[in-house]
Length: 169
Image 1 (spheres, one colour):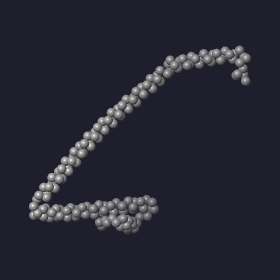
Image 2 (cartoon, helix red, strand yellow):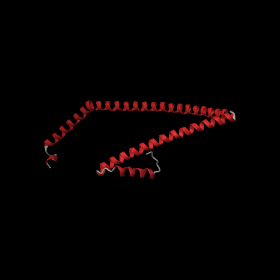
Image 3 (cartoon, helix red, strand yellow):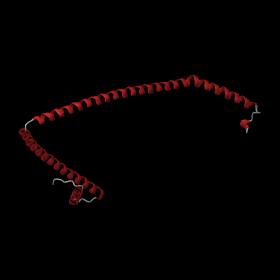
Image 4 (cartoon, one colour):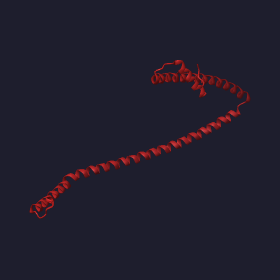
């Protein structure tokens, strides 16, 4: 191969020039290209270290806040238990007549509240049925192109009945 013919006197000069040019290129890279790269790497390392320190500080603050929250929760719980105990003792100290009147009034309020809750539940279930019917109608219309409002309402009612959900209307 002519490229590897070391007997040729031109070949030795080419190898020498190759080594000289390579040496100059390495020197230039070392002097001018590597320092900015090293600086960028050092800046990046410093930024990462600073971010890690900030994260450690934030974690320590969060742990301290969590400990404070746990302490305040424990204090509030103890105060609430003490309040409950004091209220129970006060309630036991009341007379039987007052307890009877209070029980009667509370039963009346409970009955009224249950009626309001039942009405709200019925209204919500009616709205649920209406939303389910509308959504099902839209899906059936979109998927099949058929628009049968009565069949959709019957299907929704059967499904709600199967799930033991009573609805108003």
